[in-house]
Length: 180
Image (cartoon, rainbow, N blue to C red):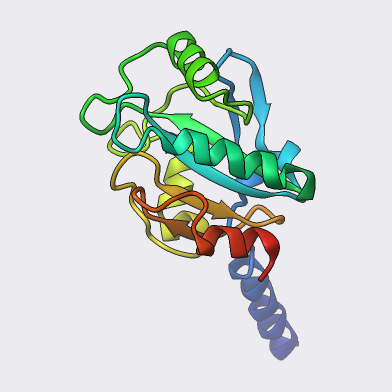
């Protein structure tokens, strides 16, 4: 009887420790125009998550992000922008100002979320998950500057990260989208 209890406890411990890491789909956020957005609505899509800023040397990446989105959105791919003012005050605007800038200058149609913090003591829960191996189960990848790109697979798991200065159309991202 004691042996059965020990075996049962061992299996229970394995089950507890074998729980998968929290998924990207576990989170909810708010769009740039103030509407609730459940990331679970993206299940089955590859998602490129990017922290953005309107006054950065990387800001022209909006154009390449939009081109990537247009080219692959029919293939279960999405881009999501998260404006943040964490680096050099390069995103000082309100959500409305950011939205007007993105749609006016770069014709952005991919989903833009409300402005958040991507690092520090006030880091948004989504970015805490993206940047911490203890949260995502894959890697530590602190955000180093505007336009850092995180690759999320169809199951809501972090796959990899691409540095801020790399083009959204780099081989690493395009090959991932295509499944190469």
